[in-house]
Image (cartoon, rainbow, N blue to C red; front, side, top):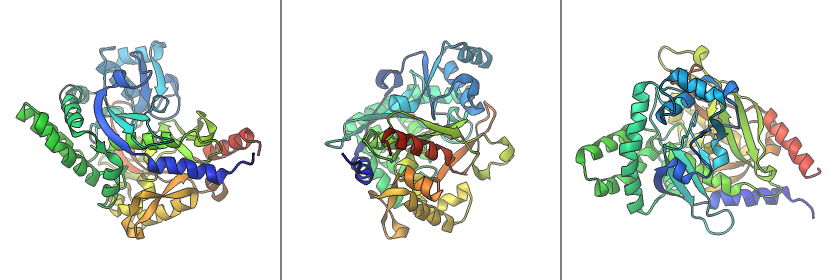
Length: 419
């Protein structure tokens, strides 16, 4: 049987686009994420051992171990992490994604997203932890007492209220929310101001309906409203559900995961099973918060590139020219970024459309063949973490994955399919 790569890619992209990710509930991670046991910590990016972890990832691991009560302080947590008693695995191996360090432990609250598309590619679940906001937070490797206090509040106060509100709502359609947010100036990765407002708008009546404490309700509404990244984590879970629907299509050269752990940048490809193709992650170029410079920056980190993998983020920058005020550049750069991404993708999204480009569908389905042939790698919008553990976010910018990982994937593809 002759291999029809283009048809395989269209099958993968169709599954990605027809996915209907619905935010169903919030639950304890260990109760819903397959295989997440108490001695296991999930992290962003491809597999990595403690010794090779970057500063922000080590910091997030330390914070998670203290949060779980497995260690009382930094030194005890670091000793435990290095002892072999704690196992580590990529979020992607457990139907999950996490921004920046992405560390998720069994007691943490997570969003549960269900792909309600009918037919092939539907029915899968995806998960992501809750967003803490900007600055000194666990996902950037901070673990000070105030960081852990916020996490406990999110787990003990906000999460139960979100759970009850989502369950009475019947679920939120995240594909529809994303499509609307793109028409309101978001790109779905680093700029989520419109999406977070829409998220709060949809949730607020249900939060009010289930709350029995007005002060608690006000606190949760204020936290969600003040955090322009509130919607990012459920959006990431939605994109993970879309990408997983496209994974496993025999013969497809479409990328279904891009992820970084602060040391390595890795990709997975639909037609190449569970294999990771990795190379050293680059350091983002961008704007830094007051008091920080490029010398403070860690190489790129996080699973949030799942957004670019499914056609938003930097691939939809033309919809969000204001993003350049946060990641550097000029409005024209945002349009040119999207136009360039059409060159390396195999389709255009029918639901995610871009007003400044006459509502053209966003470039969707990174094709490893085109990346290697043209020498053009995907664009990524990203936050920048301090290279040392415990400090947190120091800026935001742009980065590209190393072309070697696409070359590795293409060679593996040629070997598997005897090309």
